[in-house]
Image (cartoon, rainbow, N blue to C red; front, side, top):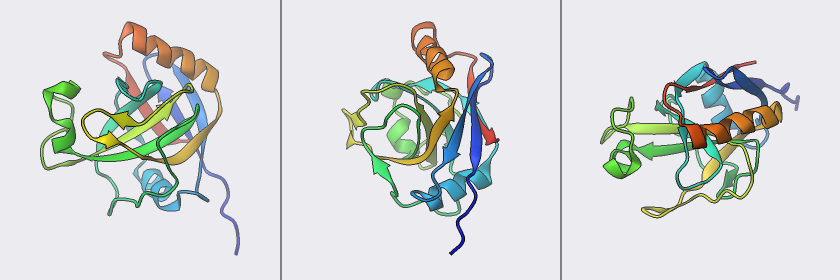
Length: 169
């Protein structure tokens, strides 16, 4: 069987002008990679994780014809992992999460969380629901150090007005 050529995406913090390049893990998460690739470009307000630690993410309305199965799962993402999470709007629509008017976050509507983990010591454990495994669908291969500095600054300085964008490289 012929091997598919590697596919790459650009992940960026738009206002800060920083980006990194990630390789899609088509061999480990082919359904998820296909769904994301077909939906690109995607861009949304960036959030910094409260629970998982060193993570930035954006939320999107569901874009796959069917939700991918839990392929290549993890609860301990490492630096450079891109993860895919699917939540029901009901899970995220409580005031405790602070999404307010975030597009697509409403009861009854699925919400997709595309995340970049930029440093180590992450644990996907949420006090409300327990373990939250994510699908690792990409790995940063270039530019992680600069992106990590800016992601950490988001934690300290705030993310208001910033967006996280994913596009084909």
